[in-house]
Image 1 (spheres, rainbow, N blue to C red):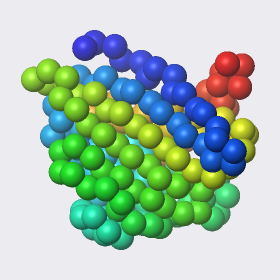
Image 2: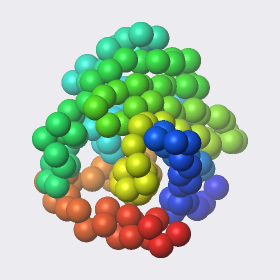
Image 3: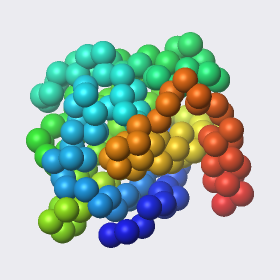
Image 4: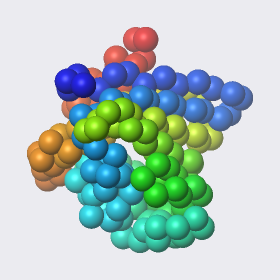
Length: 172
């Protein structure tokens, strides 16, 4: 697996509920990807600081956004529970106020490769779906970089790339 780009995600609405899906083929073993998506040490490299992450079903989770600029104050910190936990396979967090259910499902795709199936379910409209697709897409770009040893410099983060991605999702 040598594809270094993030494939576009898909979003679907059922009434006021949104479901987003991404499939990321990653040229890294499951244990390495698990460390990035399911540990307090790995999450800040591409997503958020895990101020609290109790690695068990029902455990507490608090994530603090590291990118700062452009986010509403109440979106910078999300809290919730671990709603699925199967070590090396599934990490799922249900967090408020905006993000809903966030699920990472890892499958081996070779000796040094992983297929990451991502699902995000939340309550919101079409605009929020486009916002979330762009946001997750950008974070998955960061995940690829972090897994390759190049974590983002959060102090230089701007909304520019997010806007570009959102426009692309809006154009279909």
